[in-house]
Length: 433
Image (cartoon, rainbow, N blue to C red; front, side):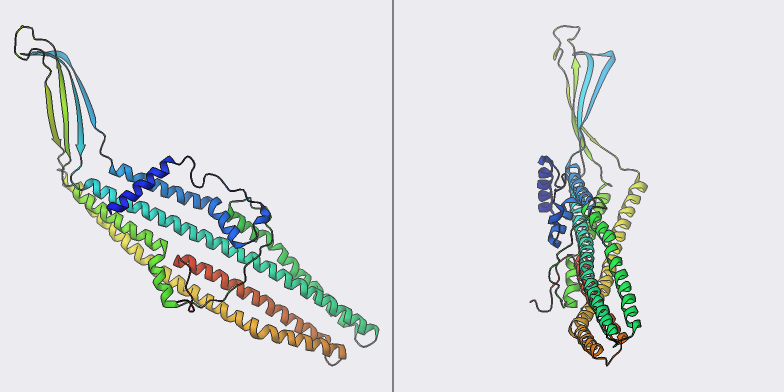
């Protein structure tokens, strides 16, 4: 604990000599540079208002440490004799005194320990805020990236339906198809165009989410993102839970708060003992009326000692009971938080594995089969062996599978990001040693 105190004293000193706070200025980044996830995370880490607030909260907690280490202010007293006190050595005119109170042994140490671990708890809360911010950025970024891929799929299907319409017109002109085929193609074209427009309109609310995390104006447009190649991961359940219990910053902050409560309880017990004061008084004395007196005009100097009397035991006992209740409350809060985090991580782990399963299902099986069905249906329609409805149905199936595949990939990335926020660290996979 003494090492912690020294380190935090150093942090306090460094904080005091820095002219500008760490987050005092926003970083000017050109919009065109915000395309990769790492760009967004860096920008958010420097500019997000909530993260700045958490950082300043930590700085405020660090500044509590030198206050806890300080002695009470010395007390200066002054007295003027309205009516001079005549003594053998001469009349006394005025009196000066100074007194310094020293807390009982262990009080300052307990106060300092409480402030030190409270500052460490504030740092862990800052880390938790940063992890939460990074998850929010990742969640919105992956949604933005999904929008890019969904729009591309919708455009490709629009072009495909336009091609089908041309085929239907050619066959109708050759009397090889009925006019309703053209109408069906046009209806399907209108439906796909509506899907495309809906996806385009989603851009504004998704960008608003990102801008909120980046501390940018809500309606400022962001360029289309360039996501990294998605990776499917398999997580070791037991290892993940062990890491969560060890590295989650919320749990670490509460652990430090438990230590702070223990130090506050120790301080409450020390308050049953008196504080000790030591000081000096000086009395100005004029020359004696009768000359030749010993110590003529000599100013007396008095060494003073004092103690306070902690006699109101009911109040002190109540403070001790309060400190014990606070300690029990923090311990139970930590236990409840750990249980909640584990349950939430289990649920998100299920969602991640379910998304991974769907990604493999659509990517490896359903989409290839749907493409094969569409190609076969197109060939069969041109040869007149299937009707136009079968061709449109094959196209709808492929579109649905493609969008479900992209949705599953996005969900997988988002759930992995949420798990890493809950755990407080990058998750090891089964393939990692």
